[in-house]
Image (cartoon, rainbow, N blue to C red; front, top):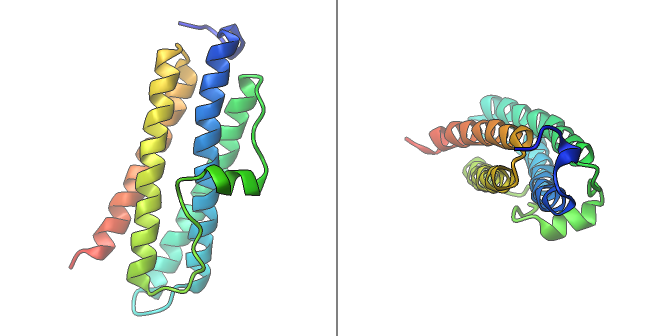
Length: 157
């Protein structure tokens, strides 16, 4: 097990940074998605959904920085081009023209994707002995699963 990020082999740092950049790209797209829905939600559940979408985009905005800073701790390049992040993201943009249920479903799908991507970051980090990135990925995965649960609860009933 490595004691510091820089004590990892260069190939390990590259693999982990690639996984982190994927998570960061998807987190960036999900941030914009939540903010878009925050601006455009209407209907009977406006208040709670407006607040939930804000909670999500504020969390995700901070998470982008955490993920990028971990890439930099590995002495690798943190991808910052929006076009490149959109291209690689498994989460799609949305134009915001949707009813509240469609918004919730799209945000739920994004949160589930983020959780899955972060599970992949955790696996890659564990394989390469990077416990600090592994810990970050597990914690972020928990956050996304909680948001998924909260969104799923809105679709029941």
